[in-house]
Length: 320
Ligand code: A3P
Image 1 (tube, rainbow, N blue to C red):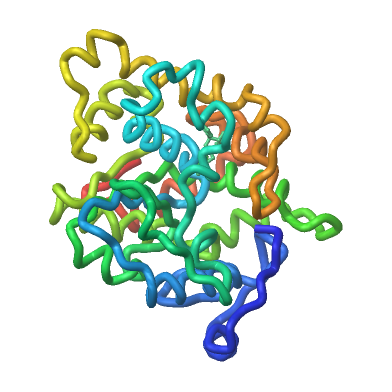
Image 2 (image 1 turned 90 degrees about the vertical axis):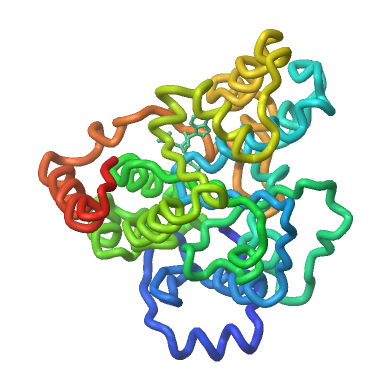
C-alpha cells in the first residue's frame, strides 16, 4: 500500500476520465467499473484483466478488504500443502512467512508493476491466488475457465472498523490520520477500498447461488463460530477433501491450530517481519473477534449500517 508505483500511460489516460476521491490511504481512489481502487491497484487491475490466464485447476481467493483474507490465505495454503508438510508445527512455510507472502494478490502484487509481467507457468498445481476485485472486474479467464473461486466477506460493521484502523496504521508517515466519522461516511457512500462494500458482496452472492460448484461463499463469522465444519467444506470444494484417516489423525485440528490468530500472530515473522511491499506483517493481526466494532461505533452508526445492509441485501435473502 505504501509504495507509489509508476503507472502506465494507458492507466494515466484512463484515470483522467474517472471520478476521483481522497481518502483511506495516502493515495487517490478512482472509480472504475462501479468500484473504488487506489492508483497502484487500478494499474494492476488493468494488467491482470489483460494478461492473467486462469487454469482450470486454479483456486482464486476473493475477499473484501479486512474480512479475514490473511486467515483464508493461511487455511487454503495449509490445505493444499498438507501432504508436503506432515509435521506442520516443525517445518511449514506458514511458520516463517506471512500468508500474504505465500499467496499473492493478482492486482496488488503480481500485476502491479507496469514493466514486469509475472511468469506463473512454473508454479505448482493447483495454483493459489488472491484478489479483492469485484465480480465485474475479474479477468475474463477466471469467469470462463473451470477454476474455483472462494469468496469471503464479513459483517460491514467489523469490516469498517478493521479497515479504518488498518489504513491509519499503514498510511504514509506524516500523512494525517483519518477520523472515524469521515471514514464511516465514506464507507456508507460506497467510497472504500473496492467499495461499495454491499455491491461487492452482492455480486458474488448472486453468482454463488447460480454456480455453487464454481463459487464457494464464506463469511468470517462462520469461520470463527464453526471452524472445523467450514474448513472441511472448503477442502471438499477445493477438491482436496479430508480422508477418514486424516480426520482420525487430527489433521483438521492441526491446520486450525497452525492458522489460528493466536499461533500466527505470535510468530516472530508476524511480530517483526515486513512484506516486500513494505507493510509490517503485524498490521494484519489486530484482535480477530466478532463484534469488536461496537467498541468504536456509536449506536446511530450501527443502526445506519444495519439499515443500508437490509436495504441493499435483504431483498436477496442475504443477512449478516
Ligand atoms: P480485526 O481488525 O477485526 O482484528 P484481512 O486479513 O482481510 O486484512 O483482515 C484482517 C482481519 O482479520 C483483522 O480483524 C485481523 O485481526 C483478522 N485476522 C487475521 N488473522 C486472523 C486469524 N488467523 N484468525 C482470525 N482472524 C484473523
